[in-house]
Length: 249
Image 1 (cartoon, rainbow, N blue to C red):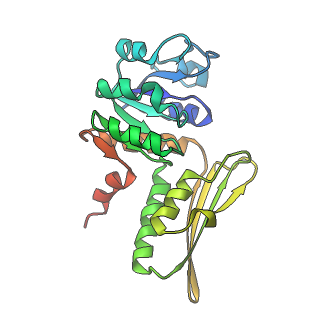
Image 2: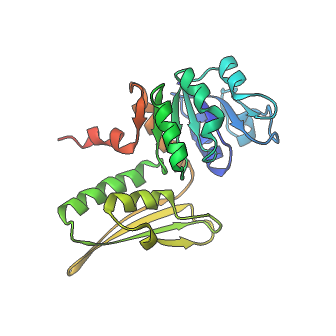
């Protein structure tokens, strides 16, 4: 499966590392804004022994349409920014290239654009693409269904400097009917990401916790999603669409 990666920040590098070490995938190229690493070999730059020859390209030296025509891919994975979808979205849709977006925050405008692209190709979006945190979300919804009257608190912890409330925490809150302003946020040190849902029952407490130990967890999530999208037709998908069949009895 040929992959194109948009964005090469800390998480993008971790995702690239996982993809380069997975024999089922071929990282064809990385596309980023700045030209600081233009035409560098991705594996060589990351210090990974790999036969992949995927190079790093910048928007200043090559347009995304040129890149897609010269080096076509099956899937584009986006770890850039909320505006990144406008860089490649239409070109990918017209070429029937599947899109996996792991952007934390999208405005209604971007969500509407994703919806329009899903009429052309297979589009997946999750504000947190780790498998574990989405399992936590599933389990939380089941527990809330069993005890709809339970007290619920949501706590999210991330590295110092992360802006805004975690997109994952917002998604959990929406699923459990918790107001966004009631989410408890902690910013300290280099915490990669921790989400905790506290269920307060009379005489007992249930805590569901997910913690990302390393950003490579996002790469593992990408692999899981890509494998499960292989036979999906055009449409807009999320983690619930992918996980639900696994819970069928």
